[in-house]
Length: 273
Image 1 (cartoon, rainbow, N blue to C red):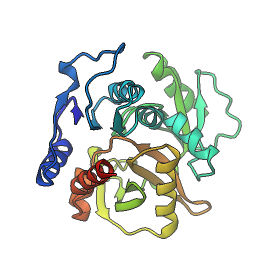
Image 2: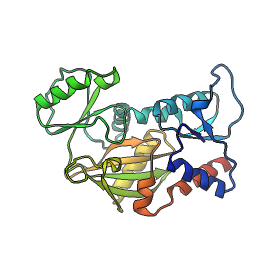
Image 3: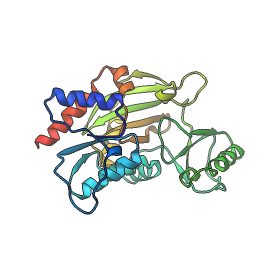
Image 4: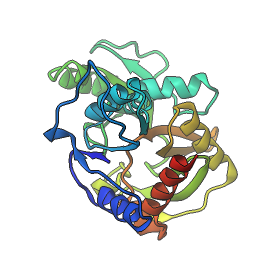
């Protein structure tokens, strides 16, 4: 298992792998260098669980180039971490997604933008640097503020604000939905992220929601992922984001499902093929 910080999720997966009598080597990527010009030792199956998605995608891709299997694959991690790329891939394969625009400057074309809108960076998690704009002036002000940052912060995605901020997390492993929950914003906020105080509870969604989530994971060539859905009265369930290195402590608490065990069993089944 590759990691840079041992969160509760990594510890839970490690415990389950050991319960299944799987030999596990823990590698903190911050303490190693990686040879690029020659193949390394046979590492078996590498579970990539880094907080830094940039490091995760890069290291996994290098390992994949040298023929080492990683879960998830490097390119899949990179494509999922870039929200704009992920949305484009999903839409191209016919999956219903939240309508999204990519803005590359502080002088966007406002045609077709219906307020309120959510402005988010193309990379990030936990609802950080995500804002809400109610009109052109607010959007322009937010974009100009973001332009003071680095090159990535000057690029934004704009999406319609759907509903009241409620979303649905569907956890997919292989071809199976193993758990799902609804997340509602805390009082006074419009973001549903549990890290920001969102209220989560287990929920069973209909088959269309689960089918959409499974298709999204397959389209991005992921082994497992947390898929975030929004529900529109007009269009049904829409994919908002797909997390290739998902946290799941909150989902386990809400549902009582041992997701760490299911990830460990999935890896063991892959190894036995």
